[in-house]
Amino acid sequence: MTPEFRKRFLTETEHTGRCLVTSFRTGKTYAIEPLDGQKVKWGDLNPATGKLEGSYGEKYKGSVPEKDSLITTENGFKNIIKLEAGQSPESYINKIDDEYPDKVL
Image (cartoon, rainbow, N blue to C red; front, top):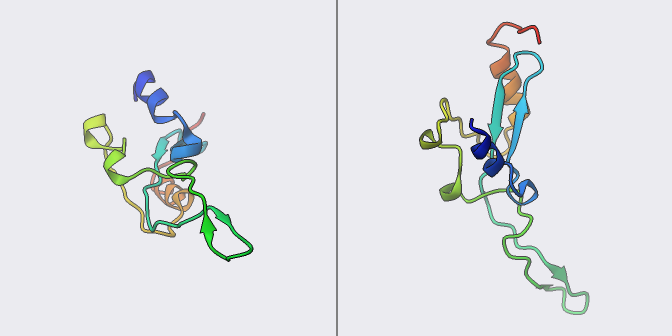
């Protein structure tokens, strides 16, 4: 992963939810990118009407549309895994790490 790509990947992480995780056990770095799933409408609840008002658009969703994913083979990624909704990236990383011998860091 080039420094330029790393910077691009980690830009506005509060909006995208993207992160890099390095295993202390094996030293491998994993790129995590939450993809949009089921859309949840949110805004301000009007207590008088009980309706949701206001729109915060795409801000602070913590995920990206699949079409905007940076984790692609074109960007040099191998072994791309798409987890099902509800699967924990941390648990999956631990499962992968269990397949490799410990690395002394």
